[in-house]
Length: 116
Image (cartoon, rainbow, N blue to C red):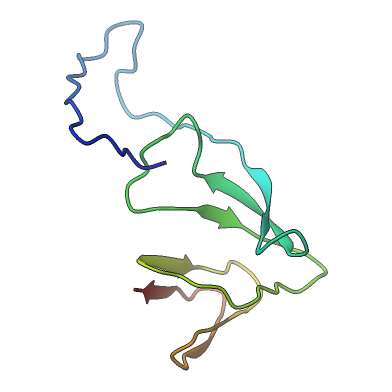
């Protein structure tokens, strides 16, 4: 979803007219079910990336999970050159990694993990 053009050209956007947007607006992107961690994994609701929104800056994914009767379970997997942000609204989420970090993130807390 990143712009991979070797020499991207700058687009000059004209000011919005009567038919255009003249100020702030809200855009709702639909979420879709995505298996996290393979076919036997749990499903998350993924909002980003979207085909209609090809450049999303530093964000790779925007997922939501739960509430669910089944606990969140994600097998060990690599993260290279990215950050994850975990912000639980309800319930606890346990993050463990290969350097020995073991953290329980609770509602109202924010966890940022930097990898690679």
